[in-house]
Length: 173
Image (cartoon, rainbow, N blue to C red):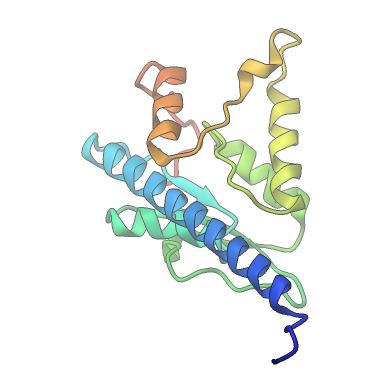
């Protein structure tokens, strides 16, 4: 009889995590494709998906817009050992930042909605900054929704804006 492989539980846990990650990647890609196709049909050039421009879920979102034939923005951060912009960001809308604060400011200047997929501490930081800025001292829990699919995200955004997102005063044409 062979001895049990001590690394097997770690390998199984890693495989489960990758499977779960793949589901989130696909939902992010589908969400961006749905939203991009919808607004491209309406000739809205001021409603684009914006990501940090990196790999993983950010890549999935930029890829979804790319798959729809739409443009997307990437606000990438320049760090010593960090990623390069993903290949699905529209080249003319790929911006590189040295400081997280400036990058976050540009996210918030252009945002009409924030969709957060599972991520790291940067994702949580951005999420809570946005919640803090839009807080109204009323029923704050109504400021966000937890959903599982791309269609549910689109439905929440549609309901919030009554089907018509506001004009973007800082549009990129």
